[in-house]
Image (cartoon, rainbow, N blue to C red; front, side, top):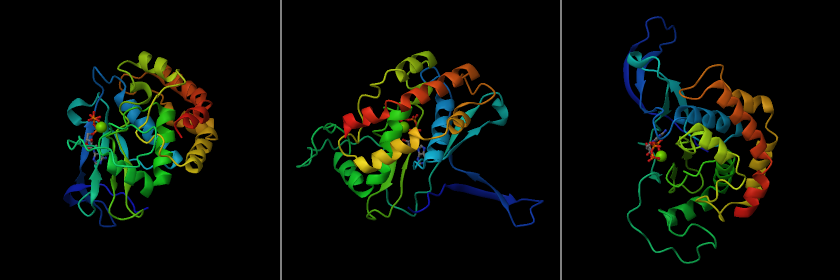
Length: 259
Ligand SMILES: Nc1ncnc2c1ncn2[C@@H]1O[C@H](COP(=O)(O)OP(=O)(O)OP(=O)(O)O)[C@@H](O)[C@H]1O
Ligand SMILES: [Mg+2]
């Protein structure tokens, strides 16, 4: 797959002590913070990003960030993709076309879904990435996938596809941390996925295998920090770590139900 690049907004000046010609500059980012409805958004974005990186899931990278005026408040900065040189289809926009479902739509898919024709094309072009992403969403409890990915549809299967926005998964799948843990402890959650009935069983199996055999130390290092991240205390972080280990055991059954 071609490399996903991020967008430099401005190059400001040469770095004074660089011996290799490094320049200082500004990247385009989307800054996300914890709020009343998403109390653990920053932590959940960070953890989903770390887990995805380990597992080889195509997600846009994000980093923890602080602003000099509000140093105490940790944000998640989602690095905005450089889209100018590619024809990336924006699945994140609401689709006002309300198309009739195309003929021969697979049975059991979400019929009322936006961008249905493009989603079907996407699942045919990128069966591996779509299966990987779907299995991952079930593990991290992400019901918010329908509008949260972008992809090139015009380059056959040689284009870019990337997911973004995990701010409603993990400890932010409900508005409170306790509510989210309760949700994650339900083994039939999530109950649906935009790619259901369209995923390739072999590729899904491969990602299940990767998640199930992911070493505990790797899950731990992705979920546990030695300090609170936004509203999420180390105790909450340990609770998520334990919950994710349990959720792995139900992944096979969950995916079997949507294949
Ligand atoms: N890394 C990225 N690269 C390109 N576009 C991005 C990136 N991150 C976010 N966006 C764009 O910004 C929009 C808002 O980002 P995001 O979905 O993370 O925020 P949100 O507050 O959770 O919004 P929503 O509730 O609509 O999903 C996305 O739908 C997408 O169009
Ligand atoms: Mg979004």
